[in-house]
Structures are given as C-alpha cells and as structure tokens.
Length: 294
Image: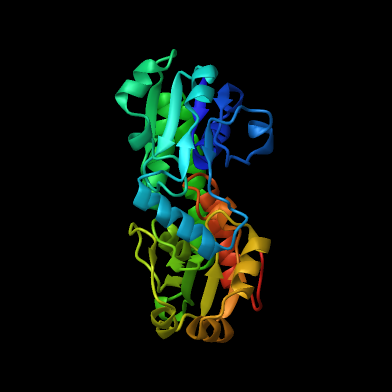
C-alpha cells in the first residue's frame, strides 16, 4: 500500500504505526521522524514566506483569503507521480496545511492515475485525535497496531495526571499563545493538554478553534504562566517573536507572568502522537520552580 501524507501529523501517525516505509509522498512541512521523511517526494507547497515576522505572515495569509487563494497547495503533478493508494489529509485548518476537502475534489481524484482513497482527519479535541489515529490504522489495515498505540498514549496521559493530581484551586492558571502578531490563543486540543499537565487554561476551551484576542483582555485574565508555543515555530523563533512585541499590555503581561517556551511546531500544533509528549513537557514546565524550555 502506497501512502501520501499531506500534513505533518499524518506522517507522524503513519510512522508511529510502523508504516513509514510505505510513504511515497509527504508535505513540504513534514520534518519528523527524520528517517521517515528524508528523501521522500514533497507533494505540497506554499508561497508564504515563513522567514518574515509573524505579523507580515498573517497579512500574507489574510490577503490570500481575500483573493481566494489557499496558502498551502497540493502539487498535483508530484502527487500523480507518487501514485498513492491512500492520501491522508486534514480539514482542521487551511492555514496550517492543505484543506483536503477543498483541494482534492472528486474530479481531481478521478484524474489521478492511482485513484487513491482519501482519509480526512478533522479532530478538534484530544479524544478526536486518538480516534483519528485508529481511523488511519483502519485505512492502512493496521487497526490492531493503532489500538495498541492509542492504549499506550492513554496510559502515559494517566501517568501524568496521577503525578499532578492537585485540587483545582492549587493549579496554575495558564495561557497558551499560538501566535504573537496578532495574538492568537491556542484552542482545539491545547486546553486539554494543559489540564492533563496539571494546569487550568484561562485562554480557551477544549474543542474551540484558536482565535485572536486583544492583549488587554489577555492581560486581564492574569495567568500565572504564559506558555509560548507558536504554530510552525521552534523555541528559538518563538523567543525572537516575543522579543519583538511592543504592545503595552503584552509587555506588562509577559513581565508579570512566568513565561515558558515549548516547541509549538513539534508538540502542540500537530494532532498526532506527540501531543502526549507535549503533556509530559508541559507538566515539567508548569511545575518547575523556574522558567524552562523544551
């Protein structure tokens, strides 16, 4: 079975199921596991300049939306050459990855020589992510492997929860930033990651989409900890983005709360197995006596 992955989380799920050798195409963003993506054809592309500051990137994306142009596109020729039997995509966020339902319509699929089956992942919470792992396993004839993987992930979550089972009033109030300019608070599964790590998310509710909120409002929520886990950025890039913030309320918020950094690109933005590792890392950060970085 030949598999094409259109976004990083799908690639990570396929690899965790032991099927990395079946990958015949991955997205331009796929970077983990290294052995699974090295040398694989890239079947998506973007024209967004991700080296720009976050505010400039946001303006590019907004302009693209006004023009009806997706920021990330399927490379149809590359996908055709890959001849996949299964294509795994998503419909959670058209900014972060290809919106497979919008871009792989029936006529295009019919034109592909391999006539692939499309699996669309669309989880907005942690339970949905685990269910999607099983769905991928079913599509790849690896259901038992997927169920074993999910059972292991649930066990790890339970271990973290047991280790940090403190009364809710004693838990740190946490704000997780997904983007700095404009300020986006992380939604979807992230509030559940915070709860599993022993914190209380004061920025979003589980299952809600990530939304932009004014710095003044975020400051008023008085979080104990601000977790900077920027979508698509590692810790070094996140630190530069924070250093560039000039908004008065933002500066005051970041000065009064404990600020910790997490690699959002690797751990919080991808609905795959490493979300559980994100919980483990968040627990260490939230309950550490001083600032940490992961």
